[in-house]
Length: 404
Image 1 (spheres, rainbow, N blue to C red):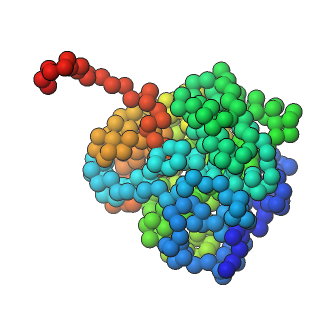
Image 2 (image 1 turned 120 degrees about the vertical axis):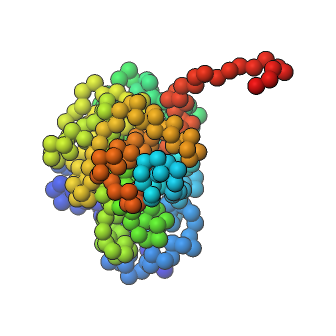
Image 3 (image 1 turned 90 degrees about the vertical axis):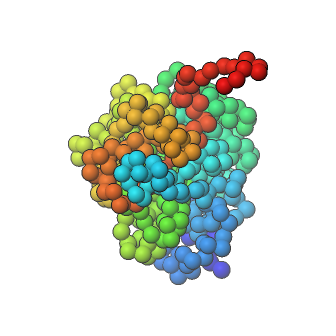
């Protein structure tokens, strides 16, 4: 039996500095996020991709490629192995014969943020963290508060005052310390940063600890495993802080190095943003390596309302290195896509996920997607968490005994 985890260190992708994973690490001394690295040669020697078929349907099936050394430190609600389903009716409407949804809406806490929370909280527990703090647009704070409760770690969460109400309730019911700020996630981030500096608390902000991304990367592992260790042609991902698309790219790169992807090719990655908050799209259009702060950002797809991501250079690298693209979607198009996915396929998806379907339709119309390509749209959360995005109209009220 090999190691439970083959993590070797964490590394700065900008300056190359290495840090021990057995110690608490936040950003690199140069200010860059850190990435977990594994001894992939030892993984190759001790682990076969065929072994996963007999393991539990949890993201922890990939534990050798996750950062927790001791199984007793794992904090789990059974997350992972979400459905990957073909959507033939919607695909026909879009002119795509192989359109798929990877549906994170059915995961515990109702969003893909659960993956980052499970792995991030588990590693925090292993590092003896007792109190963490983070800014959030809603779903991440909800997930981290719930997993922190299970791990007996104190959680301080700051979110914009207009964050989805359900996410506030999740933090509250989990016993988290919830603060609402009259501003954007960038404002919440400044408040949390000051709080952390004054109190010496663990910073669980996006990419300010190296392990949230390790949970998110398991979406990439799952997609490939669910396709029989083959990669799709294109993966579309709603992009705010960017951890999901960075994680999927990291997973694909690791699978390629392990030789577990049959032909070694990578899918084209598409960063999908809203027109009201599209810093990555603007940077990609201009061929830049980093984005600029997007002023006066606003979108109903609240999870991707991030005017400047600390990991923007990693998102752009993932797009460039896979010959992908970035696209901004209008509010009308994403709301229409949300209705269309539900009415044609029965999936009530979140507005962020809906943006990826709108993007697939537009990219097919533009000829960037070919009709026979295998296309995966990531739905990152349940539509049930955003009831305000659906406006009911034209419903008739009946009196008792009145006929329809």
